[in-house]
Amino acid sequence: MSVEDSGTAEQEAASSPATDEAGEPKLRVENITKQFGRIVALDDVTLDIQEAEIFALVGDNGAGKSTLMNVLSGVHSATKGTIYKDGREVHFSNPSDARDNGIETVYQDLALMDDLDIATNIFMGQFPKRGLGPFSFIDWETTYEQSRAIMMDQLGRDVDIKTEVEFLSGGQRQLVAVGRALAFDPDVIILDEPTSALSVDATRLVQDTLDRLAEEGITIVIVSHNIESVLAHADRIGVLYQGRLVDIKQPEETDLEELNELMTTGTLDAGLLDDD
Ligand SMILES: Nc1ncnc2c1ncn2[C@@H]1O[C@H](COP(=O)(O)OP(=O)(O)OP(=O)(O)O)[C@@H](O)[C@H]1O
Image (spheres, rainbow, N blue to C red):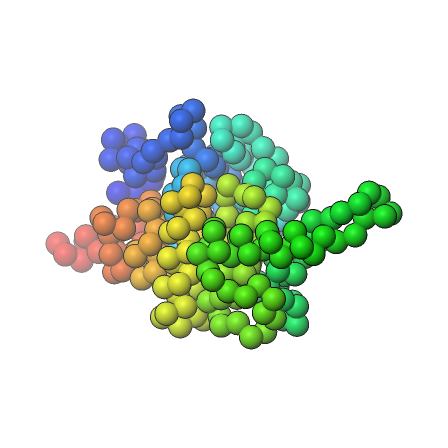
């Protein structure tokens, strides 16, 4: 099914499986185009992402995944088009605008401070404070208490939050970066390649944690090259090809081969012709 073949009931179901109580998607990207000079990185992309869904964005190199992620996280402004959050039109001039609207992004490099402990990494830049104005100081007790709550209650990890991040495994580091996002109390978390370069066990740990967050009601958007992982864990998979959103699939209706074909050709028609 192509997104361009608009109007079918089947497409409606795939692009919009459920809505929140108010009948609005958590995020709506409407006719978004992003140009860098003459390069059209995103070409008229329209997409609804529902509350508490795990939505994966896949595509070949240069397909526009990072650009769409950056438009949603306020790094880039769209050239054309509109973003809606909970049905309300929003404008992001920078990442703090996205943050103010409940959208946090976990970048691939994680940007953790290796020689600092888990709690300090989680609250870096926004420590709980005591006192007023020039007489305020970091409330370490609350910092550790709240970090422990994030790691234990929200992420289900029984770790010593005084452990320096340099001693953590790849999967645990990814979870600390997610913990730092959670400290801002978002309802949408965007993750860039959350399982790249992770072992099989670490990948499972991260996937299980994202499943858990979605069950708690947080909307998860993943940019990924790991098709097997998104097939196993995403609710829906949006395929970008040369800046266009060419299809949205549910894992149970597609497979690795079909997604690869969509990612590399932008269509399934080539395969159908081969079969004739
Ligand atoms: N800041 C920029 N300036 C100019 N061109 C850019 C910029 N960012 C992205 N592009 C171009 O936009 C297009 C889409 O790039 P984007 O990084 O979004 O793709 P991607 O799907 O994330 O690719 P990859 O998987 O390789 O990261 C590419 O042609 C890229 O060269």
